[in-house]
Image (cartoon, rainbow over all chains, first blue to last red; front, top):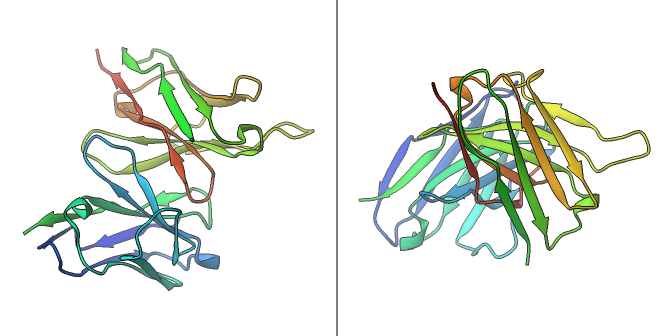
Length: 108
Length: 119
C-alpha cells in the first residue's frame, strides 16, 4: 500500500499569499497517477488536479500541481477567500487507492 | 448537468445492515467506473469500493480490506444507480459515504449520506 504523507498539517496564510502544499509517497507513484482535491466544511471533495499537473475542468489557473515519483506539490499562487479549505492528495497508481491525511489552509 | 445523489443512510446498531443507493444523471453511467468513498467524522477520506462498467463476463469489483466480506457493491445500468450493501456493520464504519464517478481520479461526487453505527 502506498502511504501518502501531507505537510504541513495546517498552513496559516493571508489572502493574496502563495500556498505550497506537499504530498510525499512511501513509494514511487507510477505514471504520476496523483490527484488533488479541495474540501470545504459540509461539502464533498472537489477534484482540482489529476495526473499530478493537469487542472480539472473549471479549476482556476491559480491552482497548479507539480512533481513526480514520490514528491508532489500543489501550489495556489494567490489565495482567494474561497480557497481556505482542506486539501487532500490521492494516488491511483495501485490498489488500494489511498489519500493523504489532508492539509488545512486557514486564514491567518 | 451531472448529478449524483446518495440515499439510504441512517442509524443502525452494530451487527446490522444498511443499503446505500446513488442515483446518477447527466453522464454516461453505463460506461463509467463508479466508487464509494467514506469519511469518518472529523477524519480523512477512505476509498471503500469500486465497480467497473458491466462487461460480457460481469464487472470488476474492488474492496478495501476494512470492508471485504461485509460490503457488496453493485449497479443497475437501466436505473443509472449504484448500490452499497453493508452487512455486519461496526462502530468504526460510522462515516459519511460518498459515491463518485471513476476509479482513478474522481471527477464527480455526490453530497454524501451519513451512516451512524451505534448501540
